[in-house]
Image (cartoon, rainbow over all chains, first blue to last red; front, side, top):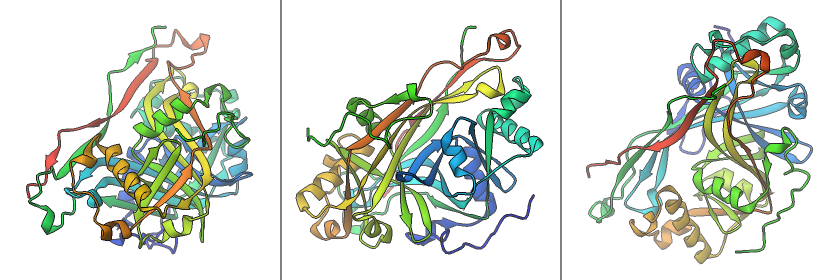
Length: 202
Length: 202
C-alpha cells in the first residue's frame, strides 16, 4: 500500500459532534468507500458551494473520480480543494420518544486537493476499478476502453491523507421514563439490495 | 402550498452536463426529497468546503435540517449559503463496453440560504415531519418532544426556491459495434429495502 494514509486525525477530520462515533482506522475508511456506490463531492463553484453526486473508485490510499472531457466541473476541480463524502444507511433508529430518533449509518469524509491523472496506465487502472467497484470482476467481462475513449475521459485523484469515518450502530437511546410507553423501540434495518439483472435485449 | 417554488431554472440549478436529464418540475423534486433519507449538506467551514450527511424533512416548499443546540455546525449554518443534495440510486447500468457503464439515479440539488427557525409551532411541525419522514405516521406513535427537548433542538429552514432534479433511467448506451460482444448488457436494479423491525427488548 502507498504511504499516503495518515492515521492521526487532523483538525478538520476530527469528529467533533458525537465524538465517540469517530473512527480513524484505515480498514474502516476503506470498507465504507468500497461498499458505497455514490460519493457527494463538495467544491467551490462560480456559484458558491456545490455538492454533486458522482461514482468513484478507491485504489490503495487514493480516491478517484472520473468523467467526460466535456465535463466542465471535472476541469474546474483540477488543483481544487474538495470534500468527498460517502454515506451508507444501515437502519432507522426508532425511539419511544421523537427526540431520540436517529439513524444507523457509516460515513466517510475525505478532505483533499484533487489533481488530474495524466498517466495512461493509471487512468486504465482507475477505469477498471470503477467498473469493478460496481460489479466485482466486471472489468474482465466487458470491452476495455479504446485509446480514443481514454482520451475522452478525465480522471481525478484525491489522496486519502485526511479522511475519517463516523459510525452509529445499535438500538435507540431511551430515557428510563419512556421505556414503559406503549410504542415500538428498536431498529428497522436498511440495506441496498441488488435485484436480478435485466438484460437490454439487444 | 407556499409560493416559494420557482419553476424556471436559475443559472446554478440548470443541469449543464447531460442536460436532457435535468428536471425542474416541483413534483419530481418533492418526490426525490420525500423518498430520500439522508441529505448531503455542503457549506463553507473554517476549513474550507465541507459536506456532511444529515437527516432532513420537507414541508411544502421548505427543506428542514435539525440537530442539537450543541451542534456547532448548525449554528454556523444560520444565514449561510448551502447546497443540499439528495441522491437515490436505482440501478447499475452495465454496458458491454467499460466506457458506457453508468448508474440509474434520481438526484436533487438545492441551493439556498439556511435560517434558524425560532417559531415553536413550526419547530414542532418540523420535528413531527422528521420522524414521519422515517416511518409514515410515526409522529403519532411516539412521545412528542417536551418543551426542554424542543429548546435543545435547533431547526434550520432552506426554501426550495432554487432546486433541480437530475434523472437517469433505462438501459445502457451501446455502440453498434459492441452489441455482438459476448458480455451482459443491461441493468442491475438497486433498491433500499427495509427489513423486519428489530425490537430493543426493553
